[in-house]
Image (cartoon, rainbow, N blue to C red; front, side):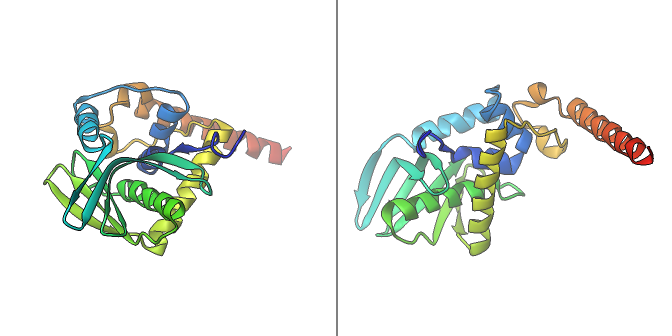
Length: 208
């Protein structure tokens, strides 16, 4: 298998950072279900990343730019990259800013791709949120870069091992379109029971 064939989608990093089980259901088990939120997000991206480019004064805007990073084995497409003249990636999201870093990681991965492809620094980018319809500037700090690279390595590890993590039920499950596929309460309870049984077996073996 070549390095290009072994690449995984940048969008998977966002799924993995949001919920490892969601990532596995989508990218390993090919499960998908759409709800209002995912449909709105899909339509937003279809408009935002339609391939093409435009220029206004000194700002060149490229939409739907194909990305790759061979070192991290990532591939994907940027919604928008503004050249000011340096590259400045912009990711579009339909909803509000999330309490975790899943969107930041996705954007940072785009920057890492651009840096490798264009051999130029990409210090910052932005995320446009549909609520409240404004951009949030993002600096690609050493900590965010390290987090992105760590998640990329973890994603490849899980993919190679074909591991679907157990559910971690929480508030984030409410708006997930895969909640009826995942069954977080049931699968989490089953995983806890498995862990307890394994611990009891180890304890008995230690006594013997």
